[in-house]
Amino acid sequence: MGKKEQNSHFVCVVCHQHVMPLRNGGYRNHCPSCLSSLHVDDCTPGDRKSHCHGIMKASSVKFSGKKGWQIVHTCLSCGVERVNKIAQGDIQSDDWIKIVRLT
Ligand SMILES: [Zn+2]
Ligand SMILES: [Zn+2]
Image (cartoon, rainbow, N blue to C red; front, side, top):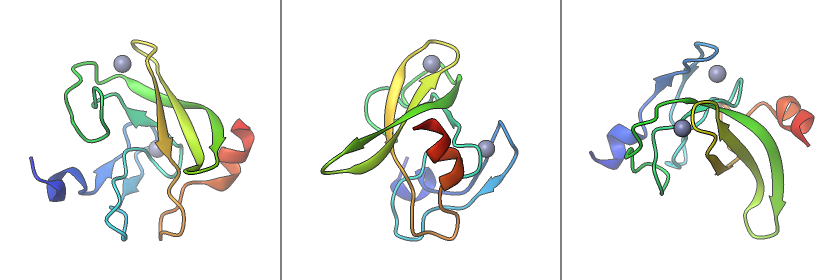
């Protein structure tokens, strides 16, 4: 699967928001509205190797000096944790109010 397909728009399974790809070509894997994601990646973001497909809820945020703010997602099915970049400066930026509530 090419980068173009991976970065296409998707409909959030949690809040049914239509999520458009990032304009800067960055890889978006979570919903900017409810911050939920799906457990589809195994090791690296975008590899689509996981067979879990559980819903990943944003559980907390952490700050890394180099990467800035990141969302910690926890899978409701298998409990795995993933750290993801926050999407900012886009038409559909991540909901900052929801991010702040996680801190
Ligand atoms: Zn959503
Ligand atoms: Zn999972």
